[in-house]
Image (cartoon, rainbow, N blue to C red; front, side):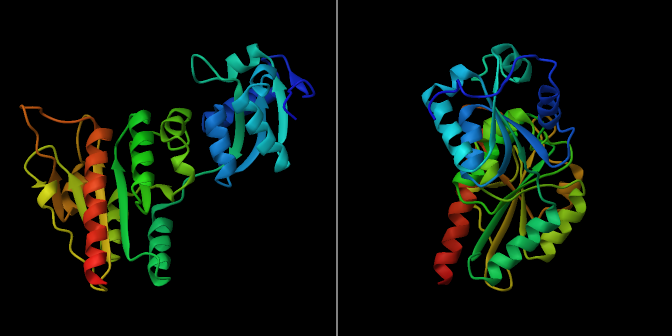
Length: 291
């Protein structure tokens, strides 16, 4: 239906459903997240995420984007609940809410699951090159989401968030990722050292971003693993502190973006985009040369 007039409405901001949604969005319910915005809800549904409920104002339900979300939700048997504008204002994490929200079952994998996934992919012949991006203390949600979106778009195998990173399921991270976190394997890994050592044992060449003094990314050479496959792992350090001492002690190489006009550094997301593009291109080149 195009109209939201037939929906059961929640009018009171004190309704338990509002608290439930806020707990999901705040990470207080394990394995559950809150989604805000018609685009993000639609992305989750189309990516196969198990959405539990969709909440919408009548005005949003009657809009083009809201109507499409409702149609997709109803086609999959997802419960749709109408909310008043005052309820939407209480649920929202944004200043000007669109009036569409959802709760969904989603959570990051572990680092060991990511590495196991990459090994299976290689054994199946679909992982001739594998490139993982590891975030080391990247605390800004916008940067985490934007880097995830870039990584997904440029074909990386996975994103791993180490200690000190913004929570992957937070509303700001999810919005900045534009649904990208639903389209590639992602992990939250508290044991940074253990993960990096495991990655190296799997044949990953560990590179860490460095503001200066590293190998210029344009001249970077990525070695193949012993089995002939191209496996690389790029560490993006925190906005304020750079890479941690743990990473510095394990990395095989350090990579730098040469700067002009005495510019000291780039925003973490901007630097990550350049490095991911270059390393993806070089990793793929490795594979093509080996065919």
